[in-house]
Length: 351
Image (tube, rainbow, N blue to C red; front, side):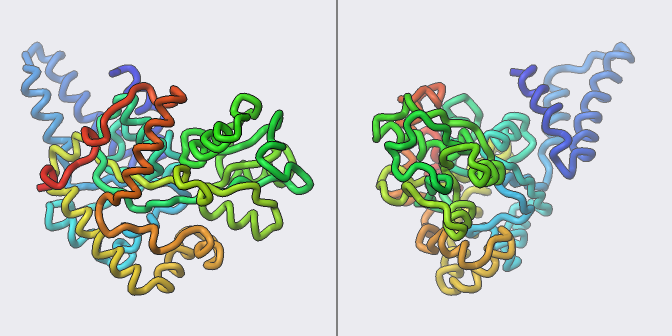
């Protein structure tokens, strides 16, 4: 595990804007250990642990999100935009928020392993896989329930799911679109006859336009953009009650131990943000369009304000989460099964 963490550490340093600060932290720890050894002084394990914990117990929240922007969308992004996020966190002693963006969920998972982020907002599929693979996180909220995915074909290409047999289909592996695609192919009995290739949304869009793949499973934003360009829609996750995705907000157990009041505060902020979004939907859509870079009509086609639940977990959200978990385990995409109740931070645990 130490070797794996070191590998992730070396891999992800270049991706972070505050890499030098993190490197300084690590260098300080190493200097402490080297000094102790070179001076022939005995430094107990307890002392090293205490020193390391003191260095890591900072007043900074490192937030991981998916996308190209440093600003999150959704309820938490809205709270940031309205200036109501950081003031509430300051009540917990968190005085700085650093946001790091990742191209997909698996990359965010590696940052969680390396303890480079404290909280992550991303799709349920990579979050479930991370937990099943032993990454020590707790689920504190679902920001969005009912994430749609679009199965789009190349022009003059297949017209139905059945016609994908023997073809290549692109999507971002490990994402909620990937889970949707595999579930759809399985439902139609052609999972063994379709080659699924890993392509990030922007690359997948270009591949579809060139005709390199027969179809792609596209996320919000990308899906409606391609629809507007005339690419035919073969299917959508929204047509299947068990295939839409949900978002997952996870916290590392280390950060939770240092900030036990954080989940409760997070969900209070989210609740107020959702209420404000529902009261001002047009204003929110404009904000989302500005952050995402998509035209406002594409944003509206991508999501419905009703997909933002006020409660930390909704009945529909938990049902979708359980169904996705069972599917991932059955397909051996998740290493082991686990009880959602062991992962979800319950109201009794939220101080």
